[in-house]
Image (cartoon, rainbow, N blue to C red):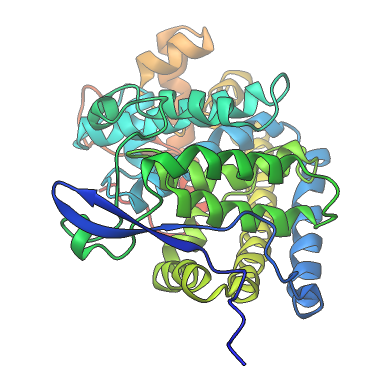
Length: 390
């Protein structure tokens, strides 16, 4: 008897690019057929659900959720952009935003800033617009608004062939669908995201949708960043997360080889369960780390406020500057004066007090144009990694 074709596998379409004939891959619509073996994923799914629920619950415990969002969004923007090759760090971005920039390539920082704009736009628009192709295009336009992405058709799905890896389609690691197959595949993906009849758990659907988006690769550039952001947007839309505190870029970066291998195994063998096990483990690991970091940051702020109240001269003004440092971990005295409304001598005195208390470090060693860093806070945001300041 002839072997039955695996319906989980896509089809290859012949196409020509610059006179070179290649085979482009077109994925089948979601959900996978045959149905997923959810029983084999019950353990990882349960762990991921528990971790996400605990992380989501912290929004009720943290005094100011917007503070955590502000910093987590920036951390995610840096990590996601680093995967695409930018060199800027979280410290570079925060210095740039506080007008205390030092030494990072401006184009790299601008790309990270564009990512923040795209992310914030998408999250804000979810209150009025479903997670849709329209919203994804709007976010792409923000992502590619300036810098190196300006020439890559911002806000427009591609009308030419792209490829992943290699110097041309002929030696590429993977060739996504040809242009005429992009929109049908995207419409299928959009329908899958909105389909409630499949009864798949939201975390499973988020993992499926991420791979499908990366496989379609619908833009000339920016696919990876939007594909990672799609995970968080979908979980927010479905109410799994009340606040977008879950981002997987660090996990994907740390397990980069496994991540790309499993994506390819889905395309070549329909190995969805192996991918989903990896994805759910990443969800649980990331959510647990975010929960622990949030608790450490809350404890740090409380400890420092108590010390300021007990040990600082003129504690009220010092507390005002300390509050500012929670959203701007790098400050200059003029910048702190502008944002806090305090007089410059008062700001200087408060910063001196914070330095004496060991909470803030002056990082330039200069007498003029000094930059102050809330070092312990930055270390927590960087997963306790040492800061890269001198």
